Image (cartoon, rainbow, N blue to C red; front, side, top):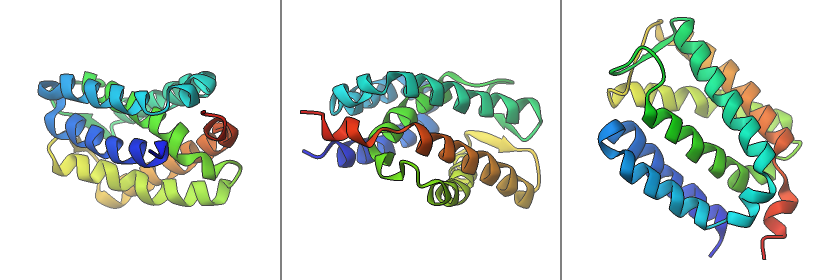
Length: 166
């Protein structure tokens, strides 16, 4: 089975479990992340430094947006446990699925600028967070943040890791 497809599909369920179920479904989110990681353990192990770098940068972006008053997550003044789990899942998925973005910085930036804000708008619709700025400002903040994050991922992801998985 193709680990890219598994990681992409399972991550969709990770996102739903984390955002919709939040703390009540942490067990399911963790189980799904475990399933996703089990589909490509060698790939993720080979990219463990990139994994931790992306995870730290992603969580730093989350903290920055909370501190700056862009977003407030439901039930906390900081970062909820489900969001930490979501970042672990996203980082693992990114290293498996986004290998084709390696050194394609413009494409990575465009994808981040489009899909980054969409996830936060959707998360707010699910009641996972309150967006504290007007919608155009939210879109701008997350478009810039995610464009930069995706450039970082495109720089770090290793397409050779997936080829040598066997």
